Amino acid sequence: MNRTIGRVELVVRPPSNLLKDLKVTVQYKSLVSPSHETEKRSIFLSNIDQVLNFDVQTVHFFASHNEFSSDLVAEKLKQSLTNILVPYDFLAGRLKLNPNSSTGGIRLAIECNAAGAGFLEASSEYALHEIGDLVYPNSAFAQLVCITMDMDRENDASIKHPASAGHRDHPLCILQVQCAKIQVRWICNGHINQSFIFDGQSFRLFLDNLAALAGDKLLAIIPYSDREILAARSPPRIAFPHPELQELKMCTQLGQDDDHLSSTVFEVTQEELDFKIFRLSCVDLIKLKEKAKPTSSSSSTEGGTQSISSSRGVTSFNVVTALIWRCKALPACDDQYGDDDGMDRESRILYAVDIRPRLTPPLPRSYTGNAVLIAYASARCRELEQAPFSRTVEMVHEGAERMTNEYVRSVIDWGELHKGFPHGDVLVSSWWKLGFAEVEYPWGKPRYSCPVAYHRKDVILLFPDEQIDAGCGGRNGGVNILVALPYDEMQKFQTLFLKFLLGD
Picture 1 (cartoon, rainbow, N blue to C red):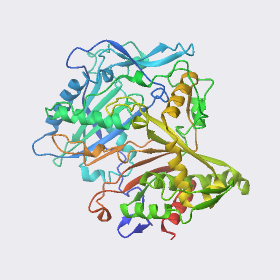
Picture 2 (picture 1 turned 90 degrees about the horizontal axis):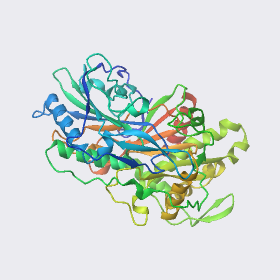
Picture 3 (picture 1 turned 90 degrees about the vertical axis):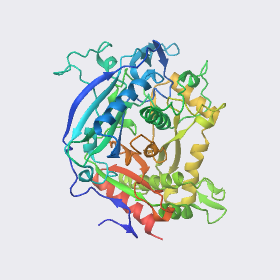
Picture 4 (picture 1 turned 180 degrees about the vertical axis):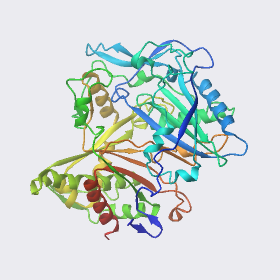
């Protein structure tokens, strides 16, 4: 049975009528070139961009609009994509390899060659209400996103790739537009791009610009594409230890080092996972913040007594992240050792921090590349269990505060000398306040926007709730926590989560 507070459901399980096949049919696909000639150039990718090379998939659902048929929406989006590939010329480019003078190896770059971005039109046999709860991470949503452009199939033989072969043929951005074939129409945009193209904030700005062009308006903001602003120093200077990063000594190029990925939170597990949404309302967040307030001026830790600043860092993100850390770490400590020794194990949580305002001088808001770094907090399991919740929240806050200009530059320089990945027990990836659902298209705002769920048990996603929250004055101020774990681990996570939230 689902646990609720009032009418707010805390644990969202898969609907009984969950569609596993949306019956999507691709009707048209092409490579879209920039509307005007663009400069042939190579774009430098920073060491932050280079950390991982994987696909980022998002879906954006819209209700039907009387003045915009699905055909008209597709036409406008295709033309907007054509136009936006001029200021965002790198989206029409291809991945290439450049020599790395610092290490004698190679590094990734983008060749701006106007090879084209992918565009598809598709249809589904279902109405939007038949798809069900858009919040629940339905694996069938992956059908709304095109992973690769196979232009050699029947009816597409006349379309030639301007690039050579292999990875260099792959578009860096693909937009798939679909609608219902039946009378009750709806629209969904499915976006896929490589992780080194955008971070969450720059992708939001891209969507704002795409929507503006679709409405025959000027760009909402001019993109800033010079990524050398985040180049390593010469010579590199690693000024801090970086336990949040793990060096991989035996790496091959272009993501072929899959054997090493098992030691990172980005491992795609082969285990069967139980997907659940833990839904926190605005009222729940207020209660968590109350729990996070210190009850005294100090707390006892293994190293003695440590002072706690009053309400320091008690933000919605910090309290949710601290709760996730507790619920994920404590069962793992028990399972690994089965006795008290497990409580002496160190646990490390990772989470992304926007470095734009933390650099000196700050990065432009319109910076198009990746400008987030992985912050971390570490503690022994015993401290997570015994210390006040306020201390756990403060450790999360301290991890973000560690991201000064010097620390960020040290991380970038570390990446110049080493190849590696973020290293921890769990990564919290927040889509919560990026505002994808606030992008205004001519046919309205998305009814819901979300990432396509992936099979990684050590990555926990935060994204906004679509339900209107009476406790927030009629706003949808809550948060959904997407957790994917093996069944037994999920039961332990859920028990701790509900006990902490409902126990007092």
